[in-house]
Image 1 (cartoon, rainbow, N blue to C red):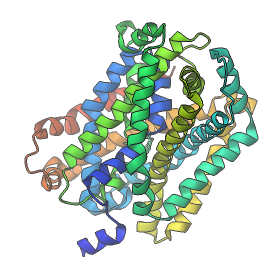
Image 2 (tube, protein in one colour):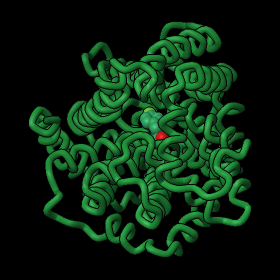
Image 3 (tube, helix red, strand yellow):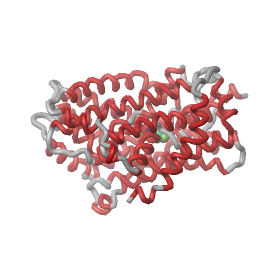
Image 4 (cartoon, protein in one colour):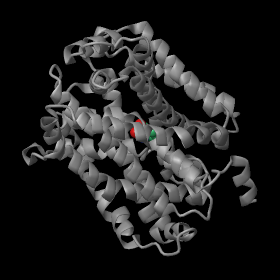
Length: 452
Ligand code: PFF
């Protein structure tokens, strides 16, 4: 019965295919757009340091917990909790995840749409010739304030995501990630080397890598923790859903480790491209906000022979990385409606996609197109509420659920299938029961003072 169900739901082709797909969900705009923005707005290197600690101590713990719940139950987040602890309020984890998924998808797709716009801009020669920070700033401001363009690009991104999701997990997700993720990685390394060798790069490196501890604050810690969850796709059940497609013989611990490692590496490399360039070419400041990478990357391409080709390649790969993430955001609600409510995949994907689009419109218009939405920073608030608070709260509930409701013993039983010698066991148990929940509670508790 169990085996039959697994086959019908689809399974990953192999362990490496799973790692690539999970890394495909994790690696995206979170690494290349949101991470540098957060570093720039939160004091530079000190944020980077707290971020790395957050990934190692808390992110990895939650990642392993989610994958374990998923593989054990072979279900979507709501069904997974129901199977482990029937008729309990803990199902909230799943419902919260569905809501969070749709809300993140809405504004995330706006930025993915900008990426598509920039791909077209690069290909049509907008960034040829002498570029300054002031010019790329103006190009971004004009572009993001054009209401029709941003909405059309948003529609295209959500349309493509909906189409891929309606076709199902394996044919949809696996195919994209296998070749394109490694390509993105190689291109990023190349660009990082170029950025590091720009005259005047040292200032940027020191902003990025030399911590100034006077800048450490509750806000820095909250945003670093939120960024860790966002970047690793944690706290809303994505990794429960993806874990549900992993085979029993795979090693969950090393899979979790690889996903955390590759995701963090790409984010760190993105910073190595952004900050040296930013400081080497005048006209921009680190705290640029959502436009940061769109203003800085064209400056790197302008410094490379054949820069247009590199620009086209970069924005295409970033677009694919973004889409492997949007599909994982949409997969959470869709898996729920298909598994639990008996909807067809097409209907579930279509309706959820439509909802995300409608919610995305005000976000799309909040970067200059509509004064009121821009002034209240609609998309910034969406990102703060769903991309930080809601993911952190979801991660807290997941730790408590695994640590105290399901119980670490039973979770370890699941982890042991595929990994009989779970060496990190004492550390993981300590983190899932005490360290992670306490750290998240403290941070959430101080949120009102932090947000000020
Ligand atoms: N991790 C993705 C990124 O860094 O771009 C974004 C994301 C995907 C967040 C899926 C949450 C999620 F469930």
